Image 1 (cartoon, rainbow, N blue to C red):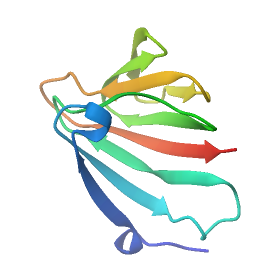
Image 2 (image 1 turned 90 degrees about the horizontal axis):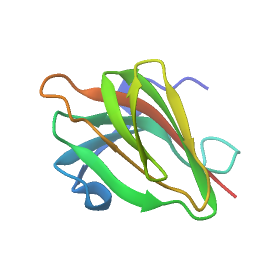
Image 3 (image 1 turned 120 degrees about the vertical axis):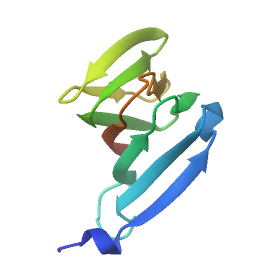
Amino acid sequence: MIKRATEMTDKINVNMRGGDGQVAVREILKKGEYKGSARLVGTITLEPGCSIGAHVHENEEEIFYIIKGTATYNDNGETVILNAGDSCLCLGGQEHSVANRNKEGNVELFAVILTY
């Protein structure tokens, strides 16, 4: 299967999960285009000052891979800085959030939410 960028859908989420500003989510593959049990396979773009608020994943886990920029990440209560090339995993029952606290440049990340 080949999927062109022009076939992918973008969604703007304002104050996503109680976060600041707006978050652009690009759904790279839609549920039903693959056989696995994922809720999201996509990219997330955070402009300066924007974030996804703290939330807990129940019966699912989320993987982030930082493509571009420097993200401030809440790893179950511990704040860490993630740079391009870093990844993180939020397991079921854990809390996380991610923010772009930089004044310039977007944070872009690849995200997969696996359900179980």
